[in-house]
Image (cartoon, rainbow, N blue to C red; front, side):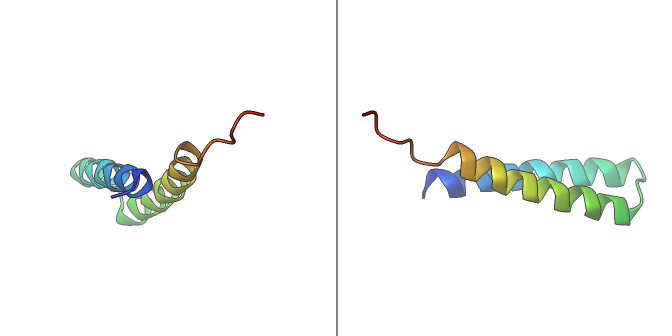
Length: 58
């Protein structure tokens, strides 16, 4: 499994935990969905940035 997929799996687990916590705090479902969508996009951007191969030194 690549670093990218491992990073995303961990991030999705984090998002699910936050969504469950928001549900237990009686946050409306539409806001949980909006927050999850934003966090998924942020997770993909962060995973791509952190697992991008570095340029070799010259």
